[in-house]
Amino acid sequence: MNNPTTVDGLIEAARQNAGLTDFGDEWFRPHIQVLLDSWVNEADLSPEGHDTQLGRVVEILANRLRLEQYLKDYPEILELEIRGPIIIIGLPRTGTTKLHRMLSASGDFQFLPFWQTWQPIPMEGVESEDGRDPRIRSAEIYAEMLEENSAELARIHEVAAHEPEEDVMLMQHSFLHKQGFVDANIPGFIQWVDQQDLTPVYEELKIWLQFLQWQNGGEARPWLLKAVYHNEFLDTLLEVFPDAVLFHCHREPEAVIGSWSNLSYQFRTVYSDKVEKSLIGPAWVDYWSDNMNRYMAIRERLPEGRIKDVYFKEICDDIEQVIAGMYESADVTLSEKSLENMRSWEADHPRDKHGKHEYSIYDYGLESEMIDSAFASYRERFRI
Image (cartoon, rainbow, N blue to C red; front, side, top):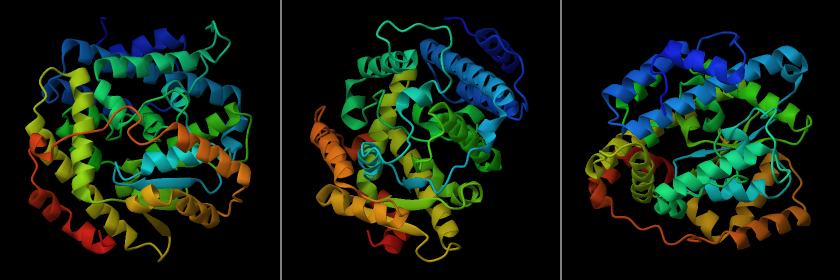
């Protein structure tokens, strides 16, 4: 696959892809250049991995073009209200995915299924052999590619077309997010993001939610959202979503960092032939401990009780009680039908469904003492 490798070339490819030319405000353009530079100078991507990443940039840019056209054609999209979204935050690997997916199965909330975040714009003119939205098959193909390249990924985090995914799947359209650090070693880009104002990113996330809500028929059900990257930008998130209902999941940091390092390793080997395990763990210790320190500083400025805390043990031992408390906090009625839906999802998704997720922290350059020291303030604050 031969992709253009400059910002201008990628933008032109996206225009040809979408058959449209107007991006509106091109505030995102400088972000792409910084990302491209990091991929070349830091990431050690394989030629195939580099092509894949560039191809995704073109797809994302084409999505921006199509969204801009929709907003011109249907200005009422921006009049839709996003009321009181329920947002799950916290470190990764803390039970956020199970909680997110189980709640999504209830039928009480709008959520972001992977197929709709992978391709949020309808694929006009594309026919489907089975009558389904063609975007669903596109998402299935991507999920199959991931599993083919690394069966271990399914044991750690299953990517499935109809299961909800994180908000960052929409936020990536800004090219100003940290999700790319999972796929590639780009510390320079991450440091650059830390210096930026992310208000436009969250404002754009709201527009994407309005667009999807309109696309789904203008439903008034509350949104259920989740992203581990919201933690350190919580003040910005609350400026855009002031009535958000927040739940923070907690778990012992050693389990978090070990599991996340293994997840990152699996993703990085999809895009690079030069991934050193021993360097991954310490980098994530620095990243997530800094993330929590920033988060705790923001939380100190919020009213007491503004965020509800949930612990991994509670999610494992009595998730229905956790869910009942979340419904009460969000002022949503929990019906027996909703409980049946969630119980059915849980029965179909037992822990270790795809095999046990095994790893050693030592393989990733980690020691227990290193992790304990880095997260000392977090552990003391939340008694972990």
